[in-house]
Structure formats: structure tokens, C-alpha cells
Length: 142
Image 1 (cartoon, rainbow, N blue to C red):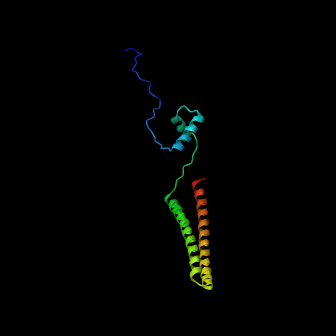
Image 2 (spheres, rainbow, N blue to C red):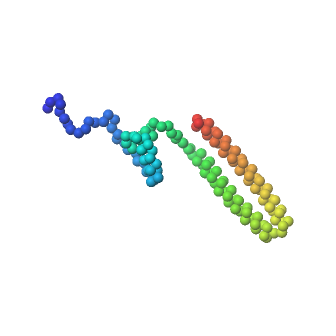
Image 3 (cartoon, rainbow, N blue to C red):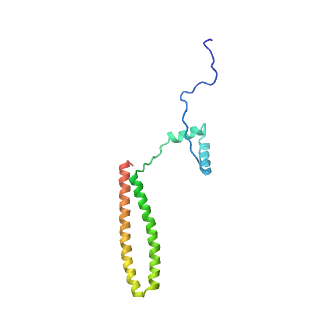
């Protein structure tokens, strides 16, 4: 064996890739990805994706458990308000059909007071949500 012995095969890479990640795309997402890839003229699709992931800044959002609970409760309030609105309309119709005008007007006035309280609570919730959002942005450094 001389000093020029050939073991065969291609020379080993400097930093071999040993790990793979899989991403699933819909047909429209795949078309968008390929369109972006063609515009860049990258060497390969994998090098284009690596460039997108590692060379361009992107934001990572962390949602803690308290934030998730808060958002779920806010969503629950929205559905509750829709239910209250439908029930309010049904109640007004029923009052006008089954009671005298004077009695219906008195009951509607009472319902109106309760609805004003609900609106006040809703405004308080909106204020708390804005405060929470401001605190979250301040704490997250944004």
C-alpha cells in the first residue's frame, strides 16, 4: 500500500447532518413554500428552509397557564353575552305578549337596570384585559 491508497467513496463532510425534522404542509402551504423557494434561487429546498429558520429573526410566544385560563374565561364571557342577548330579546317579546303594557314596561325597566350592571361589569373586564395585556408586554420585554 502506497501513500496514495484509495478507500473509495466520497470524502466525509466537515459537519455531517445527522438529525431530521419533519413538517407537514397543506397543498396551498406547499405551493407558497415552493414559490418562495423559487424566488430565492437557493441551492436546495432544505438549505432554503434552514436559511429561513436560522438566519431570519422570528418571535417565539410563551403562554403560561394563567394566561391560557384568562383567555379561556374571556372567551366564555363572549358566549355568555350572546346567550344573554338572545334571552333578552325572547324575554321582551314574552313580556309584551303576556302582560299589560304598564306591567311589561315596569319589568323591562328592571331588566334594563340589570343589563346596565352587566355592561358595567363588561367594561371592567375590558379594562382588566387591557391592564393584563400592558403588564404582559412589559414583563415579556416587548
